[in-house]
Image 1 (cartoon, rainbow, N blue to C red):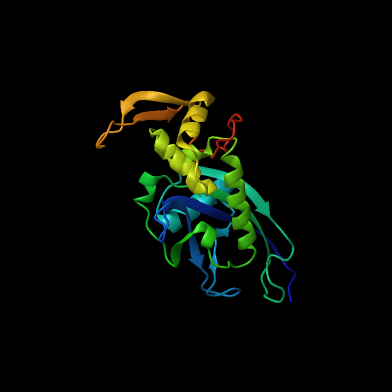
Image 2 (cartoon, rainbow, N blue to C red):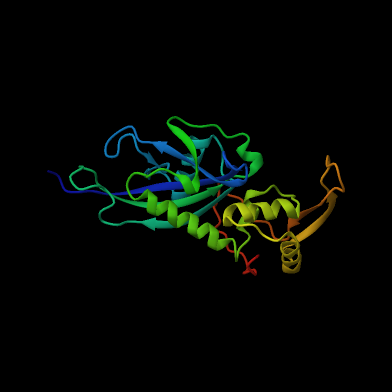
Length: 240
């Protein structure tokens, strides 16, 4: 038996907001890939791949997103590295794998163009099936980090287009945090934070008084091919 090799891999937790199939309320969804070989053949796993010698980490994460959803990432951030010695099952013949995990956030306008790659299916994130390897732990960590960042960063805006209503922004918070927010308090706190500014335009096509459109005062860096910027935004008060 040959010596165990250490393999570096990149996995990507891709999240989008879609209606829940039962309640109709917006909730987090993510694509999973069904494994077609052992170990864990037939089980679902997070999309990913071994890091190629010619690629950097972000390039690998971008390719995983494109292969899984057909989309180029608008928001991509390095999340964490997972390297427990028992990540691969004993006796499987698998090398030890250290995974650098990214998360990618898909906006609503991007999600409409998404396609499903081979052996890919979307699931409600909090209702995902038991996953291969330690991917249950990875997913739980990713969701916890996302929800934590909602309270002190502008990451919620990564789900939105450049212009949005305050109601749309509140719906993002409610979907990710899984709890209702008082509209009046939310509006007051958002406007007091000074992190959104009015565009001077209004949403068209509404039956009643059209709501005002806002934009983020300091745009979130996009995940362009040259560089992927981690979300380093000033701390903001938690919205309740």
